[in-house]
Image (cartoon, rainbow, N blue to C red; front, side, top):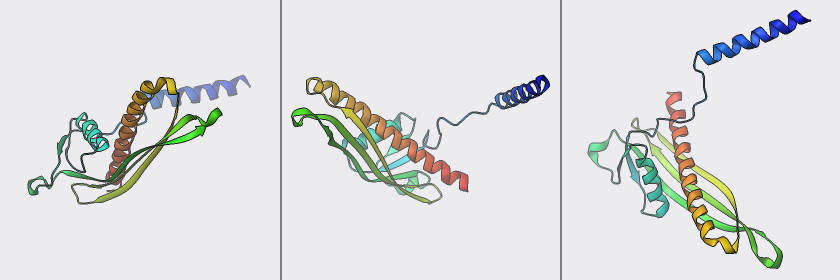
Length: 167
């Protein structure tokens, strides 16, 4: 019985050593939208400008028009970009106690090989509503909006990595 425990412990120990020595880890970020020339075709809404700003923080060069000389650039066409608020829960006295925030972006990415990727990314979050902390709630909404846009960029990176792995 003792020998069986020793063998099991040894196998577990060897497995842990092998996995840690080969530097195995899950991917936490992607380089698909890092340090690239991007053509972003969209209107000048606040959400699209936030998307452009976050893409710039990844050391990308952003162009807003499609020129003939930039054929090797990655194109991102934002077709629909929305951030909506809804009353999610009503408490005593018909007062709103919770707000549902919905984010949606519909986009098309055309890579340098002219492969088109169309996708719609949606995300929902709930926020507690307190009439006395209205300014704090507005600030929290701005932070959530940035998080939604960051998640949309991660979704774009995932789609690009998926296409790159298929080729």
